[in-house]
Length: 329
Length: 172
Ligand SMILES: Cc1cc2nc3c(=O)[nH]c(=O)nc-3n(C[C@H](O)[C@H](O)[C@H](O)COP(=O)(O)OP(=O)(O)OC[C@H]3O[C@@H](n4cnc5c(N)ncnc54)[C@H](O)[C@@H]3O)c2cc1C
Ligand code: SF4
Ligand code: FES
Ligand code: FES
Image (cartoon, rainbow over all chains, first blue to last red; front, side, top):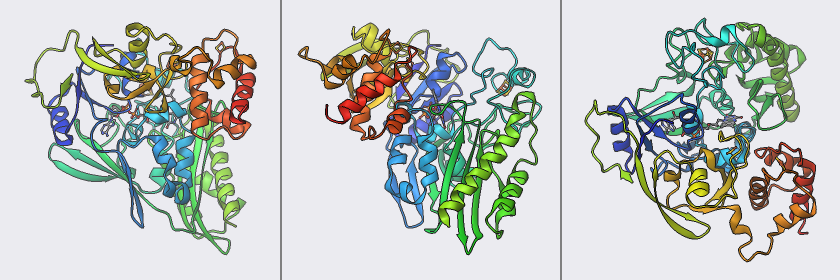
């Protein structure tokens, strides 16, 4: 690990000012991504600004939203009674991620900004990685793919966004509140992430030094049912091969409201707009579910190592829709 | 310890060679003053600087749980924790479980059920198991399996580990 100055932030505005002014400074929250990548030599900031003592933890509620401070941990958010009651698929996605130990450390802001799990990205002895070293190529496209994306990829990068909870959050149209050197702004999560294109090192719309202060999650109608299904190589404590987050309002057998997002397949947490279009107004049943799954994966660009994901993702979505519809009827 | 009151350095300054932090860690109720390299993890601080070698270094990547300790009563993996970040927090290690030499019920149950082979993962398993019960998550075989999944055992002692936990959860 490269040496760095450890600085404990005591004031939010000042923390933003310091990192904004110093390209070699980084924020440190739970550290479960940041410290991990520093140990591996992938990241090497000269100054680490510990934000964990800033007053950005805690959850507040209104009739229509849950507002989550950026420093709230995954375990804390999963334990929130309103999340448990009204947003069960958010809770499921949280508790199916990482381990209890990691969820006690990992913050919601850090979770949204977790970095690629691509093994070539995480190994600095591999020369070709456009995300780590822009312009150097992509070892994964010609190498071993498995935990990689099939939607939103480019010829320059196929890395997956591996967050579980981001899947229901994009489905819900959650909003990210940030503070930068020039003030605050709010960004819909569906517009927060950037597909790799020819700049895979730029992963989201944040400027260097912009701090996530909170996440705002709109509640679903009270009649909505939701579920998050995660398919993986082992039963627990593993990243998704494929996953789906679905929320439905069904009346008289017809789908009135629908939210669908997919994990394990996208370079960004994947809102399946096309699947939603198929399902909205349709009769809830095998035909519309399969049609939605076909629509969701239509643009998939698998490589040999990820070819299995196309059918697996479809079946994952169909199963999730069946589960939610079954619970709703 | 640097606080934000420190001025931002002029841009263009050279990277630090090594950087020290002067911190106080409260471990098992005792405060320890440490002057250490800013890169030292909580795990290395405990093992190399405080001589508390109960927490083990398995993967050093947050993946195995051998380094599990409690912070303010909650289990964390100390290998992905920077020591400086945990100043003034209440850190509890496996050494605290039997202060007077009498085994903690969870330790006793692990011994009774033969819940280990090489023993390397055991301190982490025990800290996690103690935490699991405090979290109220030891109510079924499935629940124990799921919420202990952050602790890997290379020797595969899982059935006996779960049996030990079930025993303690049942009050035995
Ligand atoms: C073994 C292992 C297994 C895992 N399994 C899963 C899994 O199954 N599912 C899953 O979803 N995740 C998983 N994760 C990832 C984990 O959820 C993330 O590492 C964690 O959520 C990151 O949060 P943190 O607070 O530790 O962030 P940090 O590591 O502190 O920060 C991450 C990044 O975000 C920046 N940052 C942090 N907070 C802010 C903020 N408020 N504003 C601006 N920038 C910020 C940091 O500078 C850094 O670049 C796993 C991680 C490990 C190590
Ligand atoms: S997929 Fe992306 S992160 Fe992985 S090697 Fe290619 S460029 Fe790097
Ligand atoms: S040594 Fe910390 S989790 Fe493996
Ligand atoms: S007893 Fe050997 S690793 Fe668990």
